[in-house]
Image (cartoon, rainbow, N blue to C red; front, side, top):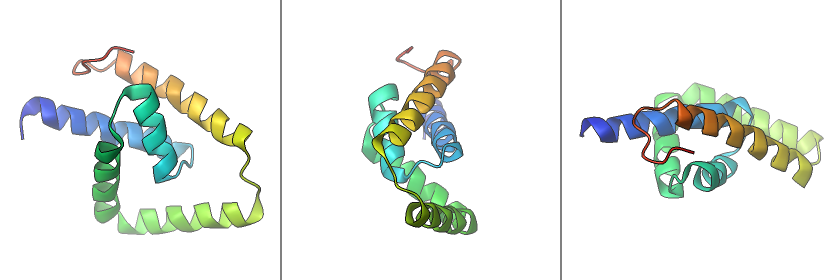
Length: 105
């Protein structure tokens, strides 16, 4: 894998970690990165799946926590929009500071 490809995958990895900090699902993360960082959903999904393979215990716990939260709270659009906006801002900042980003936000 070329250096620029490895850097791109590393960037996607870091952006997924940002999404995880906001308890976003894989689908929410794919949507946010597609919309705000022009990263194809298939790329986000592939990197996410690799992270799941490498960190099985973490993702099992993460999914359980997400399922528990969904069963005890109503998932409303304002909450999702708020998560996406905060993530958009963080993605923007990461992209601005990324020397290998082709698309400066």
